[in-house]
Amino acid sequence: MTLVVPAAPYDFELDPATTALIIIDMQRDFLEPGGFGSLLGNDVSLLQRTIAPLQDVLAAARAAGMTVIHTREGHRPDLTDAPPAKLARGNLSCGIGDPGPFGRILVRGEHGHDIIDDLAPIDGEAVLDKPGKGAFYATDLELMLRNRGIARLIVTGVTTEVCVHTTVREGNDRGFECLVLSDCVGSYFPEFHEVGLKMIAAQGGIFGWVAPSTALLEQLAATTTTTGAHR
Ligand code: TIU
Image (cartoon, rainbow, N blue to C red; front, side, top):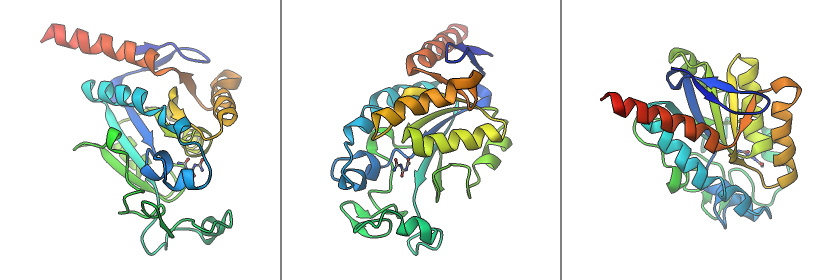
């Protein structure tokens, strides 16, 4: 089954059976007021507006039987997987591994490191812990995708120009075709968000495709309706 999603720079064709929804780093420490992100002076409402559309996309992907993979940026409690350069970056008084408002910052097992309740994973959905910005670096994401015959990725989450962009670039170089949903990704910096999306679709789709979530939802809804009619 091929769905045709109107997108920039041109239509993105996908089969739900060979497409994965990747939800990047929708973690409390990045999204919730009072968490690590807001502690650094960021306006988390810019990220929170991705939640509602992403809930709709997640529900539609589940209904269509698509592979769903959630990622979390963070480290082992002993920080052995955190490069010293990453730990030192920013000269932060409260940085990775330090006690923060929601537990130790970006440390696995801590409350702030986990995914927000609104997008909680369910059984059968992989939760991928990653030490870097990209979801492919030092993880088994590529192995999981190849084992399932996945060829295309719907990429969502935060932040547009950091972990989303890095993941799209990594995926594109590995031969995966990536569609980024413009309202399901967010940045603390509106201008980086806008330009980040343009950079993906520019030059004939140099890294991938960009479309609003409604463009995908309309196609997935048609599928579910059709499937239901055959039951
Ligand atoms: N997930 C992700 O994007 N991690 C970041 O550190 N993003 C920032 O924008 N800082």
